Image (cartoon, rainbow, N blue to C red; front, side, top):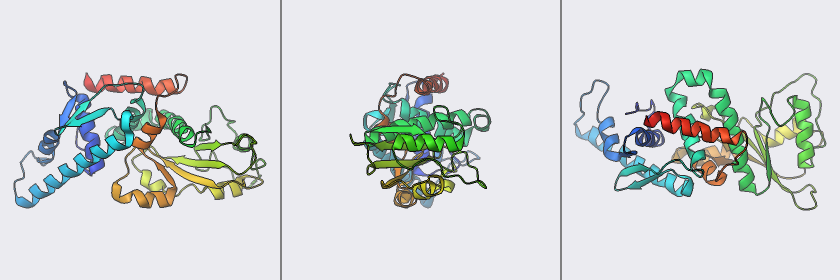
Length: 300
């Protein structure tokens, strides 16, 4: 049985339920399993007074509602089914790899210090590539990963801005800022959709990614208009849409606040649903390998 999360809100407890289903021999976990885990304090004594019971029942109801919301939001990309209070793992498929990858890096962010030290950087980069697929599919156009360290884009910031402007057909190149230097200035993902004439005046999305459990400290760090005004010779004529990508689930009561601060929110379920089946080439095949290793490890 996995350890309960340090912050037992509905989103984290639903993650716990999914992880328990993955660890179980029969690949399922019930709301009753969660109830038993929550009903015990660190000393192992069962709480029985009325106030605690009402709180527990409310927590279980919220988790059940959160799971149903995940099923509705992620659709075929959700790797579990919920029938009669039992969460059943349906198995790893190409369509569910994006969700499982996000679940993995969400849960280890609060459960594994070793992972943070050794693999968090690679996980962040893979997630940014995953966000590119989701953004590209959502706008129905093209996308690129701008986050540092860059692989397909020039590593030097000024050259990367030049390349970005060329791809967008707007911005007119890098505007020198001799006293400042930035690796990416908060910009991780760019997506756009050209018209056949490729003239300015189109859909452009600029997004930031946050993989750690401190994601709420990054809200509003990226301002697309400020980025372009500061680093591009000519601010794009197109309207710039901000976006925020994270592998976690945003609490329902905070959704509007995060959307107002960051623009279009791509949480775990939206990313999984819009990503679909990932491309088979690098680096996307690494995500599938991570998921296979993760599922095998937790079910061993």
